[in-house]
Length: 213
Ligand SMILES: Cc1cc2nc3c(=O)[nH]c(=O)nc-3n(C[C@H](O)[C@H](O)[C@H](O)COP(=O)(O)O)c2cc1C
Image (cartoon, rainbow, N blue to C red; front, top):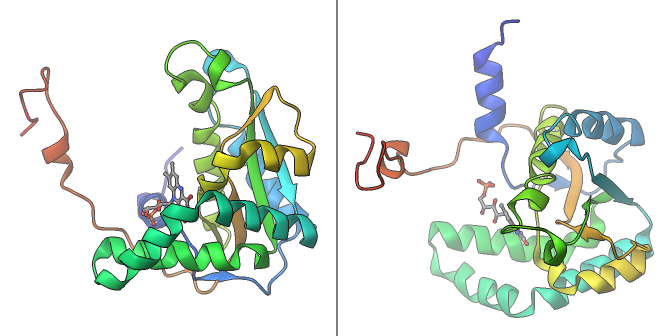
């Protein structure tokens, strides 16, 4: 099988955290969501446990309640974000965007909360096995959305109040919430690669003392 690298590289390099360009007015059909989730669960899981679960939230009252939990949980971070947003730096743009999402979260047509069977406090090691068994699937989900003209933003702020969200959604205690993804069609699809450090500066050969180049 040969891939069109122009296409696959574009998908991998332009799938951004979308907040201000989420289209709140366009419905997202279940079929599209399910198609993206079907691709997402092709992602790897530790010991092939396949403990992913997905909570889809469309109910307006529940979306509003989750948005409120998100804002409350993000309190200090979000108020710092508002201050930082005035500084004009690259981070400032992210903060401004993060604040916009916090204020408008409930307007998204659909929210998706990825869940994994298990609890970090009961998982051996440093949590990599547990979270590593859902985060690849979450990213695949975001890639699948992007390739269909939709967008999302991985958020984690509400997890500081995970129990409140669990109660609202009837999520049993043996499951861990791993984020909240606002999902919508995007306004336009022309996203760009982000500025990142040269990989040569963050890659080492054989010993951490030895930069690869
Ligand atoms: C683990 C993780 C947690 C994040 N949590 C939030 C969040 O709570 N709220 C938010 O608006 N963005 C959140 N983001 C999105 C980042 O701010 C975003 O990915 C980053 O600014 C880089 O932007 P890009 O993804 O468009 O390259 C999170 C991203 C990651 C990977």
